[in-house]
Image 1 (cartoon, one colour):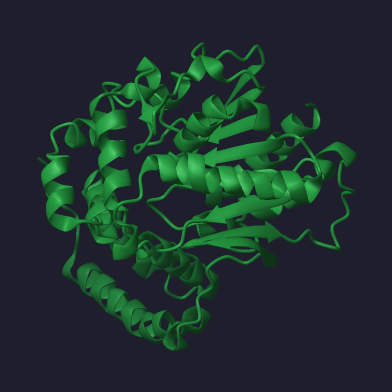
Image 2 (tube, helix red, strand yellow):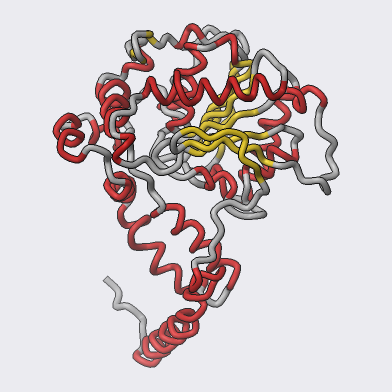
Length: 365
């Protein structure tokens, strides 16, 4: 093997430059985005509260009055409700001005609403998936039906929220006009699903019986462990190279804030989700039971747009694509995004592709 060509003077120069970047970036890290005073934003788009119940808040996002695109009359009438996952905070869909799925949907003329699940505590330990889907989601839908004087709404489910939206639509099809799912697991036992391979061996009864609610940090470190070198090491080494760019530092810190802003999971709902979806793969098998109602995907007859990430490590493409042919819809479309689970919300490529595509698809229907 040829010797490494790294003269001492070059090594010294690199160490000195690295140290300079660290020193110059230390103050910027502490002050970026007002971090020293707790200032980094959690979502950027103006919104108003429409409904509250327990920890849940239903928000309406306010359209940009300066936007040049006029709202489509049909989409202006039909509200779009976003159902986010329970396991993370929903401001990932509205992270910053130039990286906001919600702003893109508003620009396409959609009246956008979002369910914020809040932060469950010990009072929520015994909430079930039935409470979340047939309870909270259904009451939010009813608020929008009344507010807009329509018989059906449009539904956009993200990640676990997409799985919940599939369940909701299967049980309440008359209330859903169009359904969009993003990075949504349907087949929870595809061969390339590392998270599923781990979770299938989890003694979830013991975990919930001991813990009650599942701490957010437990789930967060599980997700990071799926790609430990990239997610827990490499990005911090690479951070040094952007420390002198204020905008990039603030972008990095927003992502870090979201990653570690992980709510606890209501114990019983977590138990049910792990058992029925991951361990039994009940959604695609038609064996999920919510309350006393079976969830059958073939009960979904509305138009359906299924969006997935081609490099998604949390929800592999095959886990999402498995939805094709499982529903009773005669209007099924897929949209592949050339990126991963997070990039589908915050990358520049995603902003140019995903929200406009959703807007057009809804307007056509």
